[in-house]
Length: 483
Length: 85
Image 1 (cartoon, each protein chain N blue to C red):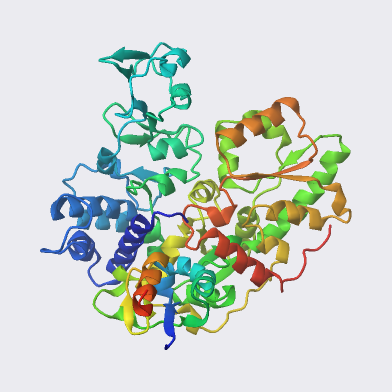
Image 2 (tube, rainbow over the protein chains, first blue to last red; image 1 turned 30 degrees about the vertical axis):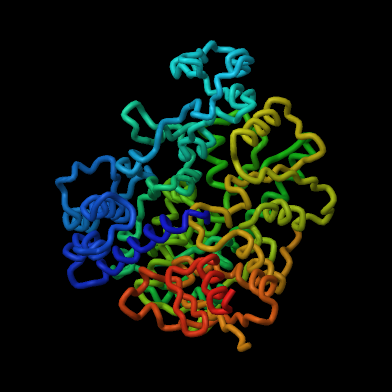
């Protein structure tokens, strides 16, 4: 959850309209009309130059909601054709994000710029501090040569008038691995070889240009089919909707699912297995071990940090164990993971036991479209109740705590928490990997998002309230069993 | 002076469309207004079934005034207006 209220509202509204179109008796026509329903003739234009551009952009956003890449749209294909293609497709893509490039026009390229506040002073600290000779004085004012500037920002710090600024590109700045870039044409695009699906760019762009490619149509098709469809809800779902998770189970079943499992059930397996592995590794003399349940971190390891692999726990994620249990109990069912983030889409794609992934915003949109009042519903029971520690997996520190509580000798665990992957924390992890030592600690919990999963890009509630609601709920849950 | 009554809709639509963030009012209102303002959470106020539907959710009622696309700031502004601040 972030502060981009209007953008998020718009994205959710489109999802609701897509779902309502699907549920209507003419999906293709209703899908085509979404931009016109949202921006009818004569309506005051809220954001762009005219109603036509507003509609064009809503069309692009709808393309992402139908699961297609916006970049490949040549503008000649209508939304009804996309809706038809969505109905016919049998495969989903492993590319989970798509960029609405027309929105990038509003954003200047990333550079250092001397503003009018430059006084043309005599000391010229900007010029003397620049190691690259990028600053010259033209007409008594400092000017930066972009071809020489390395964006080190030394001049910004040197200027006593605060006259030099860094012009930011929020998506680029937010990406911890340099996977999203505005190219020379000014459009942002994602390098999927580098992208770890952390979802930061989706939350960072003030134009809401980065979209998740939704699988909602594929999920609705599955619900409509004769097959059994089972939802697996991530631990961080507690506090994301009104009511408790028992009412939430009933609500999900009322949307057409056949059963709901808590992924916290798998988190209990993860915690116990990881605790066992931790003890073994410590006995073998390893200095530290890192957790392995965050999908964003796992992709970081694969794509950018292979050297840390020997220190990463081999234990599988809560989703892995839950999906394995569900597949065993319902071999013919279609499985849907309900997720706080885009990173888990990638994990779901790679796991044959997970058929689809739906994020919290999409589930919320489904409730809205189906007019489900969660607070009015009876409580449904989960076949297996997860432990308190497993249900706390969704916030930073929860995973390390669950490993600790799984052990008889709790004090043997000295945790250290990487609360969010960014350039600095990645550097720190690189240092641990190179030295094989993590000073004063032996269990490194790594969470890609600040705050843990409750900080995921597709969460609905703000972190502070979400954490409070989780704590309120889990104080009555049983403690995890010791290994 | 009569108390101002604030009702935050906790219906699913309002909650999903941004109402979750309004829970911050639970702390802000007593701090800022003491007992001059009474804050209540309400099950669906039924406002999402009027013309605007979900597109203007979340809704909050400040006495009889409806705040649509409600944010913490918008709600506080309406309270101030009603208190004559």
